[in-house]
Length: 260
Image 1 (cartoon, helix red, strand yellow):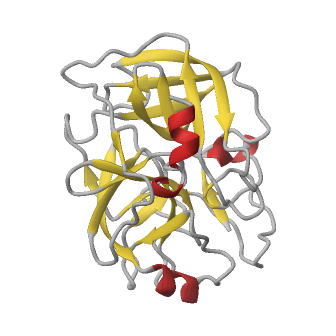
Image 2 (cartoon, one colour; image 1 turned 90 degrees about the vertical axis):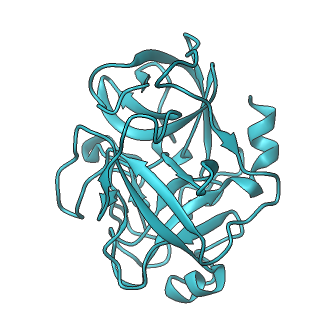
Image 3 (spheres, rainbow, N blue to C red; image 1 turned 90 degrees about the horizontal axis):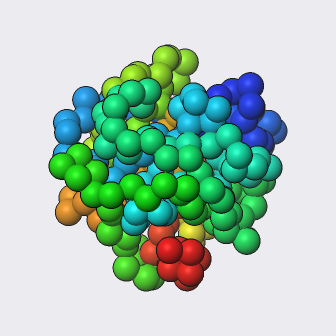
Protein backbone atom coordinates (compact mmCIF):
# COMPACT_ATOMS: atom_id res chain seq x y z
CA UNK A 1 0.00 0.00 0.00
CA UNK A 2 1.15 3.53 -0.46
CA UNK A 3 0.27 6.54 1.58
CA UNK A 4 0.13 9.95 -0.03
CA UNK A 5 2.56 12.20 1.84
CA UNK A 6 5.11 14.15 -0.17
CA UNK A 7 8.50 14.11 1.56
CA UNK A 8 9.99 10.80 0.58
CA UNK A 9 13.15 11.08 2.62
CA UNK A 10 11.31 11.63 5.89
CA UNK A 11 8.10 9.70 5.48
CA UNK A 12 6.69 7.24 7.92
CA UNK A 13 5.96 3.70 6.75
CA UNK A 14 4.28 4.33 3.48
CA UNK A 15 0.80 3.46 2.50
CA UNK A 16 -0.17 3.44 -1.09
CA UNK A 17 -1.05 7.07 -1.30
CA UNK A 18 0.39 9.59 1.06
CA UNK A 19 3.33 8.31 2.89
CA UNK A 20 6.90 8.93 2.20
CA UNK A 21 9.37 6.07 2.23
CA UNK A 22 7.82 3.03 0.58
CA UNK A 23 7.77 -0.15 2.65
CA UNK A 24 6.52 -3.65 2.05
CA UNK A 25 2.77 -3.61 2.27
CA UNK A 26 1.04 -6.13 4.53
CA UNK A 27 -1.02 -7.26 1.56
CA UNK A 28 1.98 -7.61 -0.73
CA UNK A 29 1.53 -4.36 -2.66
CA UNK A 30 4.15 -1.78 -3.42
CA UNK A 31 3.66 1.63 -1.82
CA UNK A 32 3.36 4.97 -3.62
CA UNK A 33 2.15 8.43 -2.62
CA UNK A 34 -0.33 10.51 -4.51
CA UNK A 35 -1.19 13.96 -5.84
CA UNK A 36 -4.09 15.26 -7.88
CA UNK A 37 -4.02 13.45 -11.24
CA UNK A 38 -6.36 14.37 -14.08
CA UNK A 39 -7.69 17.44 -12.31
CA UNK A 40 -7.92 21.17 -12.89
CA UNK A 41 -6.78 24.31 -11.11
CA UNK A 42 -8.93 25.20 -8.11
CA UNK A 43 -10.40 28.69 -7.84
CA UNK A 44 -10.50 30.94 -4.80
CA UNK A 45 -13.49 29.86 -2.72
CA UNK A 46 -13.61 26.27 -3.97
CA UNK A 47 -11.99 24.92 -0.80
CA UNK A 48 -11.88 27.72 1.80
CA UNK A 49 -11.23 25.12 4.50
CA UNK A 50 -8.22 23.37 2.94
CA UNK A 51 -4.77 23.88 4.45
CA UNK A 52 -1.26 22.95 3.44
CA UNK A 53 0.51 21.20 6.31
CA UNK A 54 4.25 21.85 6.27
CA UNK A 55 7.09 20.02 7.99
CA UNK A 56 10.04 22.33 8.67
CA UNK A 57 8.60 24.81 6.16
CA UNK A 58 7.99 22.39 3.27
CA UNK A 59 4.58 21.10 2.17
CA UNK A 60 4.06 17.56 3.44
CA UNK A 61 0.33 16.79 3.61
CA UNK A 62 -3.07 18.38 3.32
CA UNK A 63 -5.61 19.10 6.01
CA UNK A 64 -9.01 20.67 6.62
CA UNK A 65 -9.98 23.42 9.06
CA UNK A 66 -12.82 22.37 11.36
CA UNK A 67 -12.74 25.47 13.55
CA UNK A 68 -10.32 28.26 14.45
CA UNK A 69 -8.01 25.95 16.37
CA UNK A 70 -8.50 22.55 14.76
CA UNK A 71 -7.35 20.82 11.57
CA UNK A 72 -8.23 17.27 10.57
CA UNK A 73 -5.75 15.26 8.52
CA UNK A 74 -4.41 11.71 8.04
CA UNK A 75 -2.65 9.90 10.88
CA UNK A 76 0.02 8.41 8.63
CA UNK A 77 1.43 11.88 7.96
CA UNK A 78 2.36 12.35 11.63
CA UNK A 79 2.85 8.84 13.00
CA UNK A 80 6.19 8.70 14.81
CA UNK A 81 6.81 12.45 14.55
CA UNK A 82 6.58 15.26 17.09
CA UNK A 83 4.54 18.44 16.63
CA UNK A 84 7.50 20.79 17.06
CA UNK A 85 8.27 21.36 13.36
CA UNK A 86 4.76 21.45 11.89
CA UNK A 87 2.78 24.44 10.62
CA UNK A 88 -0.29 25.03 8.47
CA UNK A 89 -1.13 27.62 5.81
CA UNK A 90 -4.78 28.55 5.28
CA UNK A 91 -6.54 30.88 2.86
CA UNK A 92 -4.14 30.58 -0.06
CA UNK A 93 -4.17 28.62 -3.31
CA UNK A 94 -0.36 28.67 -3.15
CA UNK A 95 1.10 26.12 -0.76
CA UNK A 96 4.18 28.27 -0.16
CA UNK A 97 2.94 31.84 0.16
CA UNK A 98 0.00 34.04 1.12
CA UNK A 99 -2.85 33.35 3.48
CA UNK A 100 -2.43 32.79 7.21
CA UNK A 101 0.21 30.60 8.86
CA UNK A 102 -0.04 28.98 12.28
CA UNK A 103 2.27 26.55 14.03
CA UNK A 104 0.90 23.27 15.38
CA UNK A 105 0.68 22.89 19.16
CA UNK A 106 -0.28 19.23 19.33
CA UNK A 107 -1.15 16.26 17.15
CA UNK A 108 -3.71 13.69 18.24
CA UNK A 109 -3.67 10.43 16.30
CA UNK A 110 -6.64 8.08 16.52
CA UNK A 111 -5.82 5.57 19.27
CA UNK A 112 -6.80 2.66 17.00
CA UNK A 113 -4.69 3.83 14.04
CA UNK A 114 -2.78 0.95 12.44
CA UNK A 115 0.26 2.04 10.45
CA UNK A 116 0.44 -1.31 8.67
CA UNK A 117 -3.14 -1.35 7.38
CA UNK A 118 -4.03 2.38 7.43
CA UNK A 119 -7.18 1.64 9.38
CA UNK A 120 -8.44 4.60 11.46
CA UNK A 121 -6.18 6.90 9.42
CA UNK A 122 -7.19 10.21 10.98
CA UNK A 123 -5.46 12.81 13.14
CA UNK A 124 -6.41 16.09 14.76
CA UNK A 125 -3.97 19.02 14.79
CA UNK A 126 -4.38 21.77 17.38
CA UNK A 127 -3.11 25.18 16.32
CA UNK A 128 -1.02 27.63 18.32
CA UNK A 129 -2.71 30.67 16.75
CA UNK A 130 -6.46 30.67 15.96
CA UNK A 131 -7.32 30.97 12.26
CA UNK A 132 -10.34 33.23 11.81
CA UNK A 133 -12.78 33.04 8.92
CA UNK A 134 -12.34 35.57 6.12
CA UNK A 135 -13.12 36.06 2.45
CA UNK A 136 -10.77 33.15 1.67
CA UNK A 137 -10.99 31.02 4.86
CA UNK A 138 -13.88 28.94 6.15
CA UNK A 139 -14.52 25.89 8.31
CA UNK A 140 -15.72 22.56 6.98
CA UNK A 141 -18.90 20.75 7.93
CA UNK A 142 -18.11 17.11 8.74
CA UNK A 143 -20.27 14.23 7.53
CA UNK A 144 -22.95 13.04 9.94
CA UNK A 145 -22.24 10.14 12.27
CA UNK A 146 -22.55 6.73 10.57
CA UNK A 147 -23.05 8.30 7.14
CA UNK A 148 -21.49 6.50 4.18
CA UNK A 149 -20.92 8.08 0.74
CA UNK A 150 -23.29 6.56 -1.81
CA UNK A 151 -21.77 4.48 -4.58
CA UNK A 152 -21.90 6.35 -7.87
CA UNK A 153 -22.14 9.81 -6.31
CA UNK A 154 -19.63 12.40 -7.47
CA UNK A 155 -17.16 13.66 -4.90
CA UNK A 156 -14.28 16.11 -5.17
CA UNK A 157 -10.81 15.99 -3.69
CA UNK A 158 -8.11 18.65 -3.79
CA UNK A 159 -4.47 19.15 -2.94
CA UNK A 160 -0.98 20.14 -3.90
CA UNK A 161 0.15 16.60 -4.65
CA UNK A 162 1.78 15.24 -7.78
CA UNK A 163 -0.07 15.54 -11.07
CA UNK A 164 1.20 12.13 -12.19
CA UNK A 165 2.59 9.12 -10.36
CA UNK A 166 6.19 10.12 -11.08
CA UNK A 167 5.53 13.80 -11.63
CA UNK A 168 6.22 16.98 -9.72
CA UNK A 169 4.12 18.78 -7.13
CA UNK A 170 2.36 21.99 -8.24
CA UNK A 171 2.57 25.20 -6.24
CA UNK A 172 -1.11 26.00 -6.83
CA UNK A 173 -4.08 24.01 -5.54
CA UNK A 174 -5.74 21.51 -7.89
CA UNK A 175 -8.99 19.56 -7.66
CA UNK A 176 -10.57 16.54 -9.32
CA UNK A 177 -14.05 14.99 -9.44
CA UNK A 178 -14.32 11.22 -8.98
CA UNK A 179 -17.22 8.80 -8.47
CA UNK A 180 -17.60 6.83 -5.24
CA UNK A 181 -16.91 3.12 -5.77
CA UNK A 182 -18.96 0.62 -3.77
CA UNK A 183 -17.13 -1.00 -0.86
CA UNK A 184 -17.81 -4.44 -2.35
CA UNK A 185 -16.20 -3.47 -5.65
CA UNK A 186 -13.26 -1.85 -3.91
CA UNK A 187 -12.72 -4.96 -1.80
CA UNK A 188 -12.68 -7.01 -4.99
CA UNK A 189 -10.08 -4.65 -6.45
CA UNK A 190 -7.78 -4.65 -3.42
CA UNK A 191 -8.82 -7.35 -0.93
CA UNK A 192 -11.59 -7.81 1.60
CA UNK A 193 -9.12 -7.32 4.45
CA UNK A 194 -7.60 -4.14 3.00
CA UNK A 195 -10.80 -2.09 2.79
CA UNK A 196 -12.35 -1.72 6.23
CA UNK A 197 -15.62 -0.07 7.24
CA UNK A 198 -13.58 3.02 8.20
CA UNK A 199 -12.67 3.51 4.53
CA UNK A 200 -14.40 4.34 1.27
CA UNK A 201 -13.11 4.38 -2.28
CA UNK A 202 -13.47 6.81 -5.17
CA UNK A 203 -12.11 6.79 -8.70
CA UNK A 204 -12.72 5.74 -12.29
CA UNK A 205 -12.51 2.08 -13.30
CA UNK A 206 -10.40 3.21 -16.25
CA UNK A 207 -8.11 5.26 -14.02
CA UNK A 208 -6.84 8.68 -15.01
CA UNK A 209 -8.23 10.71 -12.10
CA UNK A 210 -7.03 10.43 -8.52
CA UNK A 211 -5.22 11.97 -5.59
CA UNK A 212 -1.47 11.34 -5.38
CA UNK A 213 1.75 11.99 -3.39
CA UNK A 214 1.40 15.16 -1.37
CA UNK A 215 -2.40 14.99 -1.16
CA UNK A 216 -2.53 12.79 1.96
CA UNK A 217 -4.70 14.18 4.72
CA UNK A 218 -6.52 16.56 2.42
CA UNK A 219 -10.31 16.73 1.98
CA UNK A 220 -12.73 14.81 -0.16
CA UNK A 221 -16.14 16.49 -0.19
CA UNK A 222 -19.67 15.99 -1.48
CA UNK A 223 -21.30 18.21 -4.10
CA UNK A 224 -22.59 20.35 -1.22
CA UNK A 225 -19.04 20.63 0.23
CA UNK A 226 -19.67 18.37 3.24
CA UNK A 227 -16.38 16.82 4.36
CA UNK A 228 -16.76 13.08 3.76
CA UNK A 229 -13.21 11.90 4.28
CA UNK A 230 -9.49 12.51 4.15
CA UNK A 231 -7.03 11.27 1.55
CA UNK A 232 -5.44 8.09 2.88
CA UNK A 233 -3.88 5.57 0.49
CA UNK A 234 -4.10 3.72 -2.81
CA UNK A 235 -2.19 1.58 -5.29
CA UNK A 236 -0.09 4.04 -7.23
CA UNK A 237 -1.96 7.04 -8.62
CA UNK A 238 -4.93 6.89 -10.99
CA UNK A 239 -4.31 3.24 -11.88
CA UNK A 240 -7.15 1.33 -13.59
CA UNK A 241 -9.30 -0.67 -11.14
CA UNK A 242 -7.45 0.73 -8.11
CA UNK A 243 -9.44 3.74 -6.87
CA UNK A 244 -8.19 6.08 -4.19
CA UNK A 245 -8.92 5.04 -0.61
CA UNK A 246 -10.18 7.61 1.90
CA UNK A 247 -10.77 7.60 5.65
CA UNK A 248 -14.55 7.63 6.16
CA UNK A 249 -15.29 10.38 8.67
CA UNK A 250 -18.87 9.23 9.27
CA UNK A 251 -17.37 6.17 10.95
CA UNK A 252 -14.91 8.20 13.03
CA UNK A 253 -17.26 10.76 14.61
CA UNK A 254 -16.55 10.00 18.30
CA UNK A 255 -12.84 10.69 17.87
CA UNK A 256 -13.48 13.88 15.91
CA UNK A 257 -16.06 15.38 18.25
CA UNK A 258 -14.03 14.57 21.36
CA UNK A 259 -11.07 16.50 19.96
CA UNK A 260 -12.74 19.67 18.68
